[in-house]
Image 1 (spheres, helix red, strand yellow):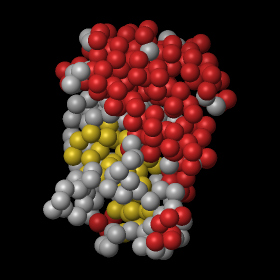
Image 2 (spheres, helix red, strand yellow):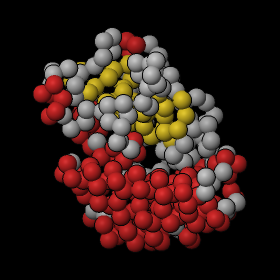
Image 3 (cartoon, one colour):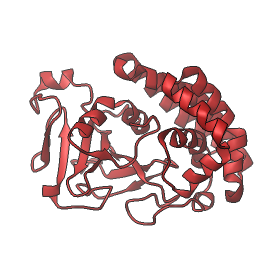
Image 4 (tube, helix red, strand yellow):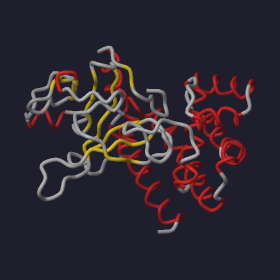
Length: 288
């Protein structure tokens, strides 16, 4: 499949989902407007990188020169006031090449630095081959991306096959977007697999045998309640051992979902998890 065809499907799906969620999740509208505006810059970055195939050693410089200016322009136009002011300050004090290089190396970063690096580098990594991704810094274990070593952003369950009750579970990389298989009821942050230490929170309650509670106090299995829920296909998967969590998207419940977009817009679930004392394994592009 050509890079153009891949880009067509990838970016069309993301734009479609932004429009759908923007129409029914007013609390996330500003965030979705910024992300929707970024998609144009990111799609061009994806196509250009697929054609240019920059070397791993030149990746930070390439992204800083080719992609960062567009991301900055969109952010200054559509971003919230605080993000705009913090971004201006950072660009006055440090060259974006260094900011991108630290994300490539897997170093801890302030939220504004991580935003700029992720928004700019992400579509480039999505377009490049595994050899280039392998040059990124990161861990090499089942909890990290097998291609670039990046941390997981989210979990999702695929649509199950005809003979299966549930689909396989995947983690999606926060850095390059690659998805890889991961065991169910196992913490993506520390590997804990004792069910008594793993909590699940959702609007519709938990499945039999799962530990956790209902986010909004709605009765599990009630059809009227299901119609009123905002996130029937998303749940919080939390760990009592490391006190971290991520959001999990069930594509069987909502086949129209696009995990990276749905996770971004599920702000109330992130806020609820914080109230319970959990921290996210990897804050998303917008810092939630």
